[in-house]
Amino acid sequence: MNGVEVTGVAQQRSWTTNSLPPVERVDRGLWSVPVPIPNNPLRYVLVYLLELDDGVAVVDTGWSTDEAWTALGDGLRIAGYNVGDVRAALITHIHPDHYGLAGRLRAESGAWVALHRADAELIPARYGMDIVSLLQRMRALLTECGVPADAVEQLSGASMGIREFVALAEPDLLLEDRSTLPLAGWDLTAVHTPGHSPGHVCFYAPQRRLLLSGDHILPRISPNIAVHAQQPGNPLADFLDALARVREMDVDEVLPAHEWRFRGLRPRVDELVEHHRARLDETIAVLCDTPGLTCWEAALKLHWSRDWAEITGFMQRAAVGETLAHLVLLESRGRARREGSTPEHWYPVG
Ligand SMILES: [Zn+2]
Ligand SMILES: [Zn+2]
Image (cartoon, rainbow, N blue to C red):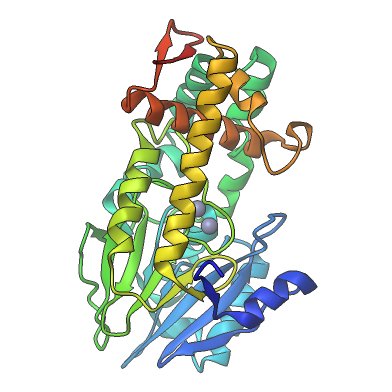
């Protein structure tokens, strides 16, 4: 026993039967609604409904597809509501499986949309008119990483296809760390947890001892933590810091945005920290084995959950960004250094 106890038993069971889990009432006035994600191994995002005196608030929304919209509407009806009853959409982060339906939901219900400031700042480049400069920065970064020229084109445009799944919506409320959400009857605080996305937040309900963890903490997989054009800096350091802060919170049950809910926040955080510790060691070992590798070459030598040949497009870019995140953290700890540019070459230190 690692101390993690699955409470979303039906959710976990649906994983083995490859079906959608049921809409469930998980606490007083709190529901989970699985909303399908097209062509994605995560299969669904768990949208949470928070009952209010005058309607309902949602945490995350789902991809902007008709199938997802129908699933969200069906979930609302099972909980006793209609789309028009939605008063607020609280978004954990900007990824399309979470933010995609925010615009449509606001248009149809008048709900206000809340998002952290750091993710709100990414909207114009990611989903609006500044896409050309974002693509240029992405190409430059991939070239720095030593990605071969023919793959740069493919990888830099790899997420363009998903833009259609986001209905562009500027948030009405910009969240900060420890923002209190203006929801009558709910004691809910946003906790800034950058790493998976610069403006990722968890929502904490201290009186209920619940943490709505978004993609920051999932029960089975480790979230993608990648350096990319919209996330320069040292995102893995940010992620580990945020894990350490969340670990100290008084939480009985974690309600994640994918997979299933569970008890055992601290042991799960410890597993994630251990996963990255081992990955950092593996990365150093690869550099010691062949000093002067580019990030791309290092990525090819690391072990992934499937063969590199089976990892394509967007997933390959995520893998390169994740490798770079580990290299950058090693550099910040004085264990690795880089030389040159376009591409950079990485060396172990000590
Ligand atoms: Zn995400
Ligand atoms: Zn997600």
